[in-house]
Amino acid sequence: MNELVTGDAVVLGLRPAKLPSRALALAIDLVVVVTAFVLVSLGMAIATATLDDAAVAAVTVATFLLVLVGAPIAVETLSHGRSLGKLACGLRVVRDDGGPIRFRHALVRGAMGVVEILLTLGVVASIASLVSARGRRLGDVFAGTLVVRERVPAGRAAAVPPPPPWLVGRFSGLDLSAVPDDLWLAVRQYLTRMHQLDAAVGRTMAERLAGEVAARTGVPAPVRVPAAAYLAAVVNERQARDTRRVSAAARNAAGDPFGAGPQAGLAGVAGGVATPWSGGPSGAPVGASGPGPVTRFAPASSPSSPSSSAPAAPDRTAVASGPVAPGAAEPPRPPATGFAPPA
Image (cartoon, rainbow, N blue to C red; front, side, top):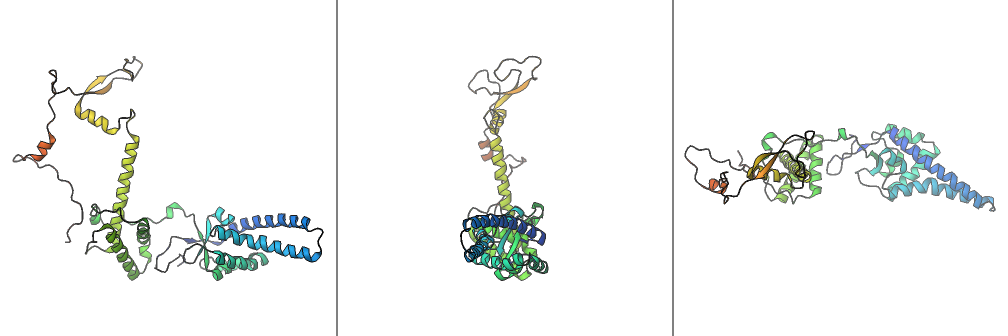
């Protein structure tokens, strides 16, 4: 298996970089480093023109070590594995467990790179990368690192599997506000990679994550529901809530063109009478070339006015709380929330 696996048997969504992309990133880095080395060497040659040969040789060796060896090590350490070439190609150097590299990793990679890249013109590094299953050169093997791709095509990203149909909407009464983001991330990573894990390991991990989610929500998980299906249903419920929240925010942001909001039109329909209106926005009539008649909702007359002919709206509270006549249909009941009793 060429993907990264942590100590908890979790498969990380990191893909090892292949030889062509690594070679292109290395070529970009070499062009930058060699250009800097030539410029620094010219400056040092002008500055040491009056020195003897031994001093010139010492300065040349120091320049070589500082620019061609020290600079790449410093860049990888400060950028956590992203040199200029790797940044352009979407690559990064990480540890075997997927964590960021440190100075000791960059030092071993840089020291081995002098032998397998600079002294052998990249032949040894290319052969080692082709032989390795994850495309690692000797510097990566000794340092315990790996070059991975950061930019993965969006179409290849794994999606969370949907829950069973009989679990959709069953956990609508759960309070998910206490579940932290790192736990959601762990659950999503497990659901997207659960088919690649061992059966026993995956079952143990699902039970542990389900216990943590149940402890955060304050409601125990159902007994007869598998842990993986429970996690999928809870994640689906959270996604449904986020979708409804975003849709409501979009509707509120759209509002009414005159600033009254979308509910103002509904209130006008419920409490007013539709009358034709052919005037413009300022109240003046529109000519023949203007738009046609526009329906305007006039407010209903007050009940105390003698000219009021519209009947008063029935009291919905009284209707809802009063007795139901024989043979009449009962009003709809709100849907039940929470867990259903086990079968």
